[in-house]
Image (cartoon, rainbow, N blue to C red):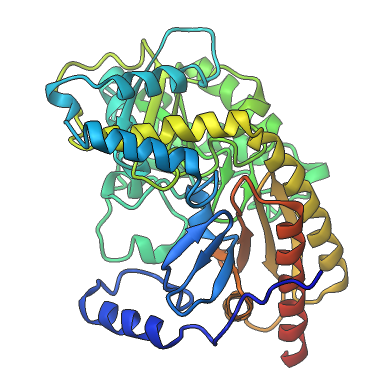
Length: 440
């Protein structure tokens, strides 16, 4: 069977150029766009531009549209809810969809204890709420977070983030109440150790230096951690997390797990933190929750969420239409076994990328957890520039990928991605790698 051609005209075409020109006149220059993609419609794992070019979306868009673009179940749920009620703020009333969704989400938080939750308008707000909650509960000012994490772009969430310097430059982010610790990056250990010879220096550094000389543990309200740093798809080793949990329990410090990017099936589990088999204090969710509609969630122990009325409200958090999308999304994932599909297809993609890395001088370090997969550009010549060239070359062939870190290329398709789509994306990527290699 002949595979249909994705690209009809070199993107952007005539119609796309008109949109880009108008955007350049009215949009904030702070928006970062690594390629000239103009999205007109989406279906399944594909998006289409106004000039008829189709792209396999293995990029940022699919972090948020886990069940695929335009899934009929989700669309019908949106229509039905919009006909009944588009919005009513939770500050002044109750909506059934808000309660139903929270009831399903709080049960996901690992632990045999009573739980509560709060719905927000986005992931950054969920993190902001978590920062306020732990400080209210503990009456302590400090929080510990990890270098390289991306918890959000609002100032509070940004204070515990450090994935890219451009996000913090000139903003006078308040960091006097934040302690940034080295993340357990076994690919590029901050202490220069190899994974098989590691003595958890990163954990020892946190306990024996930061908590001893920088900030006393009795001043720490919480530790915030991403189970997988989504900027680079680096995962915290199990033994580090278990050691961190033991350390935190010893000092009575809650742990807040940020799964705004990788939660809701992305890693081949409903939650990435499930692999730890630990009771967690609180969790933030967002991107994969509502099939692209704005929604976030903070889930926690009931004992931790003891703040009084008015401490944190969210006028648009838990919007009924977003809740309807989230409930339909969860239904689709269960009925179509998409968490299992993420695991199966992710392993298939990872195996192919590892084979490619063995024969390439441009890419290496293939790694992945479900459908959060990444490789690094390891070229000795300007890896950051080469990574951008590689992603742009893939785009011109009809494959959307995303950049992270200094030179990481990430693959994050929808959780409904098929074997054929995985193989097609890999074929485009391999061709693009060989093209880039030929000009270095």
